[in-house]
Image (cartoon, rainbow, N blue to C red; front, side, top):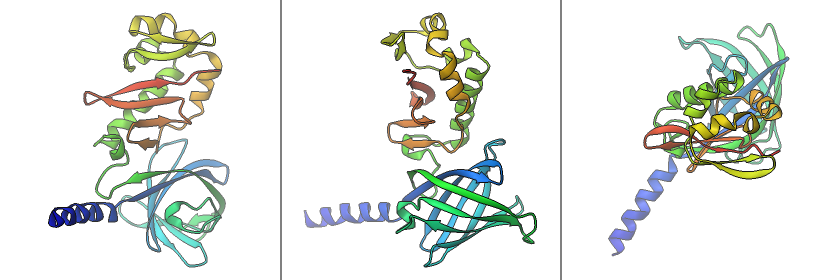
Length: 245
């Protein structure tokens, strides 16, 4: 029995030791909006960032000192340093638990073209090295997840009722005229579409960023929970629409 318990302990310890957190930030470089994911291994930091306008990940790597000063180098696809972030973490006692604010200067590799940057922590999600961003939610392919989410986001923006309705798992609960209503199928979604995806709700979705999404064991969240996605029979589906006014 003791050997069995020790084996369980070693399995748990070895599994959890190599786990960590994706600390997700949102902010700006100059007047351009960005998102950034940072992970730490002691004083070493790695991750990626993207511009909201293009949703394309750019790898970054650097380090943080004991005074919370940070330098992050930006790389091109050939591994060459093309730019850098120099700044400082604020509201930070332990980077692994998430430092709330980072401010500093972004510049090209030769330190020309400098612009102020500022990012703030919005959430942290569990990750395991060697696994994808959405592994915790049961997905093995990050690209497939984000392709689906972005297609849904575009379909809502383009008012493509048919495509939106095809991407939903039924039955699904929504609000119509202040009442919680269960939509049973695609036909019901199309029939009530304009009341479910009303103007203000669509504007809110349009302003969300369909990239670097929050994930947990029960699903993946777009925005602040307006839309939730989950794996249904190995297919990605919309499983919750929080459209309450």
